[in-house]
Length: 163
Image (cartoon, rainbow, N blue to C red; front, top):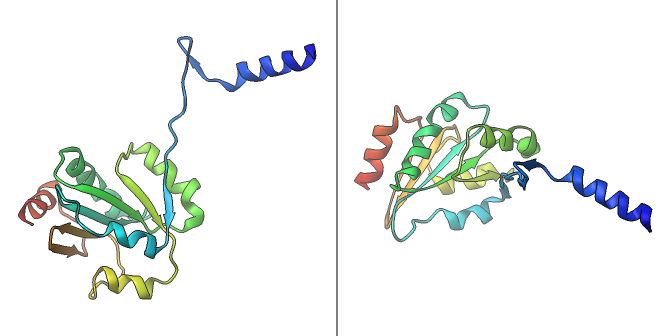
C-alpha cells in the first residue's frame, strides 16, 4: 500500500506542469471534422452580424496570406468567421492544429472531411471550380461568393460592411 501511495504521488508530481507554484493546463486547440451535411447549417447568417466562411488550407500560400484579414475582421466584431480547412484529414494533428496554435487563431476552425466535392462545391456556389482560397459572405438574405484572395483587409471589410 505504501508503494502504491508513493508511486501515485511521484506520478502526480511529474504529470502537472508548474509555473510559480500554480498548475498550468495546456490549452488544446479544438478542430472538428465535419462532413458537408454537418457544415451546411453553419452556412447561414447570424442574427446580429454577417458571417464569413473561408475555405482554405495550410499548404495554400494565398490562403495563409489572407488569413490575418479574416482574424482582424472577427476581432473588430464586424463578422463571425468560420475557417473551413480543406487539408487532407490525416493532416489534422500534424499540420492543421500546429498551424492554428502557431498563428494563435481564435476563430472557429473546421476540417471538411467530405470526399464528395463534386456534390458539395456547387451547393456553396454553382460557379465555383473548387479552387481556394474562396469565401462566402452571408448577411440576412444576401450572400456574396468570392473565389480569389483578398488584396488586403480593407477590401474584405468594405465588402462585409456593404452587405
